Image (cartoon, rainbow, N blue to C red):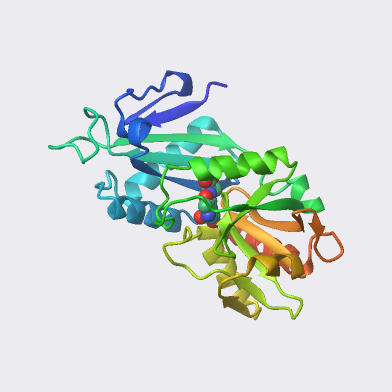
Length: 285
Ligand code: PDD
């Protein structure tokens, strides 16, 4: 089946979707993006993703071209056109096409809007059964990681290092503490049983899955702490896992070659993964 993309008001075959070379997204990474999961053909926690999209745009001074309602309608139509039952919707908005000049273009330059879908097995993922492995890498990024910027070179390099090490994710370290995964939020469970993740700030992306997982933990009476995680705490943890729209809750069983616990997904990660599935299925209707 031909994949359908959305570009500036039109649905068209993905391989016919073209953005000009002078697009500021291409020249300056001057744009933001959003990724939401699709389960049973429906978007998961999409209001939260659209709120973050709106915030990212406003933080870099791009007018949001659509209301949340319009976005949802366009995304839903794209999901239907592609017949996606399980996978992702990708949205990107850039500051548009203009002569190359660092400062914002003058006048009313329309934003470039791109959307496509990807099919992906999120629920039946064998990696979640065995548990993922991770490595630690230095965090090479800029200082506004709360904005979902398309400038992802540091994450690309981190993920490539993970691939070359034969592992699934890279946990980024700055000043001796964990920031986040190259495309995920990091959680640990200490040997004392505390669920810990880093508090929100400009240093990390406010993960939508993170927020839902913390709410689920709270609902089930599982205490959690939002505090900095020392890099060495990773290796002393009883459990670790990471969360994202594309992985939901992914148990981690090895970091930098050191096995965590008994080398199998831990009970807290497994429980939260199940709770998140139930939440996502409910939310997807
Ligand atoms: N990435 N931190 C970073 C740096 C991320 O790129 C992501 C998600 C997350 C988790 O956020 P959420 O739970 O809202 O997906 C945290 C997406 C999936 C991506 O870039 O493909």
